[in-house]
Length: 136
Image (tube, rainbow, N blue to C red):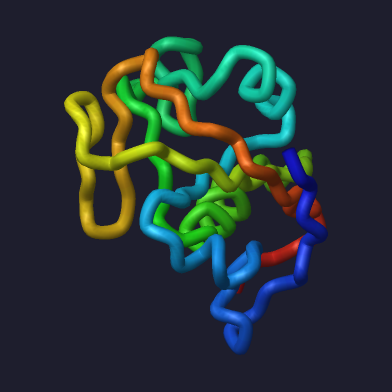
């Protein structure tokens, strides 16, 4: 798994975190989360908010794991869901699925939702989003 340097994305760069060959590949997707989830994801795989019992809205915990089709969606998510009173780094994973056309995956225009916990992508790499970075 490769660590990609944070490119300090801006409007000119399309707010992308990863090289264009990854950003434009059909089976490559992205998942953004808080840095404290990094080790658990690497060791145990991606789990739904309902499965782990926490999420950004405790009254509505998703039963699926979502992956964005562009890294800028995850960048916005990571930055917009920080605790501003105690901001921490975030992380965006870049992952590869063998196919998106399988039972258990809902393929939407901007993202996918994986509804079965046994469907796990290969983690290709990640990018740490510094707590100081502001997504504007």
